Length: 319
Ligand code: ADP
Ligand code: MG
Image (tube, rainbow, N blue to C red; front, side):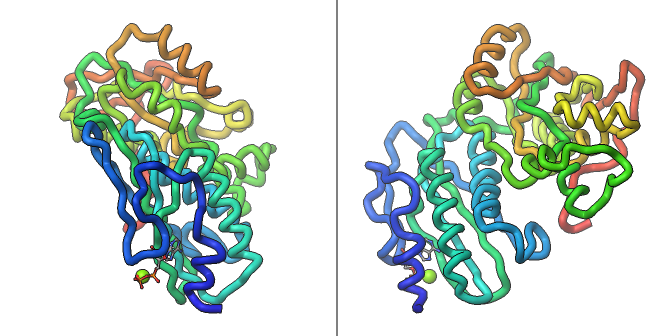
């Protein structure tokens, strides 16, 4: 089977079909109309076998995660997701794998109103990357650099579960009684906060998605905005299974430094709790205040009011 047959069979007409798409899969490149009152927002994420997944990881989980990590980045910019491009490098042609991957990818793209408009297919070491494209109203992208002194700092959902899931796949933490399926679900099937980010877009001063750990993301916002932060560790939103882990003598490090949560971390002007409560309810995920933005210039962590050192940063591929 040729490269063209693979594209035709597995990667044509995936996801939705948008009126703004002039040319999708099939020509040398895709063509889209960008509405005059919008700006294009784009990002790409790569997954490598051996680093981000294993040969045996089910293709549907890979597709789910690939879409989630990319849409999470668009969400953190306040962008409405529209298009995606898939770059796929396969060691061999495995029709069962391609079939499952394509089906799951299409389902996920459809759920988030995204159209696959192209990509690239090559033979080599197992890897893939997805580029996504979204639209924001003119000059309304939410940046890391706009946190204001006096803002409240918020997290969506819960943090730390994916990092514990990763430990479980490495057969660590076996001395604890853990709800494995909960943590593995968090690792493999994160839910990008697309709807929530769009509902919050007019309120957020700054936003970042939690891919490398809460502390690392807070430091990014603090640095880009030239502000400090006071964060209370005891306020971090933890799932019931994570709380159970703490009760058994577990620690907060996975929540602070773990990464791959794909939650929104953002700052907003104080006093908007009622609206936040409404949005949380509409989106079926919590919104939790974890601290405030200060003029100190650095990130200060406290645990039950006592100062705690910031001792690690998030996962970094080069260290
Ligand atoms: P070219 O050789 O001109 O780069 P390709 O054969 O790579 O063209 O691709 C032909 C068409 O198929 C293009 O529209 C391209 O974007 C699309 N395409 C290739 N691989 C994929 C893929 N894995 N998923 C989606 N579209 C793809
Ligand atoms: Mg090509």
